[in-house]
Image 1 (cartoon, rainbow, N blue to C red):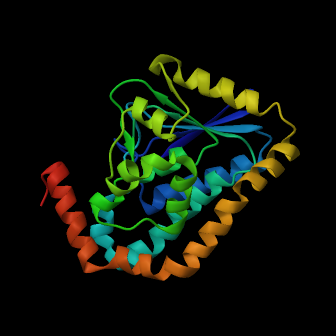
Image 2: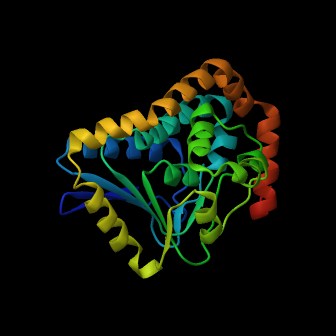
Length: 251
């Protein structure tokens, strides 16, 4: 499902789950376990990346259709834990987005402190509304904190899948990098961030993210139950099925 390698105190977490690293319950559990172990290790920083031409294609929609409400009630909190852990990870986190990072994949990339993306045909975006599901408060506040204000219509409301260059202009990523240099540049960036005293980095990151945490808590209190109900609804299931058929020609 994934591999963890270490290079000079930098942990490199590589997603390898099927052809597109689609997010299902077991994959999210594996990611959370790996993140917990990396946090407890002597690694000074973390790089997350994908395999081949895909970072992560997002949530496994077929699993959602098969498992419906019962599966979603387990999956959504588990994936939320992945995002929360990455966003509030006390060590530097660098995303090396090697290719497509769609929906949940885009959210994982955006949760990193520093975000690099390979030049080329890869696309990044959060087309949740096109898929037919609402943004959980954690996902909404994560994207709100990353996007340039004028980009919210294209990225959140229209569900645009962005080129690396558009993603850089919108604030989703910081820099477009030659594909052959992506991982080495990401490791170098992680090493640079790791030069800061760990306690100071963790404290400053916590301070920077405090408004996001408060907004997530407020959003969850106000809309959390409503959004979970929407994800589990028959209407959402119909929208997922229609989206899968449109994208992949499956019934």
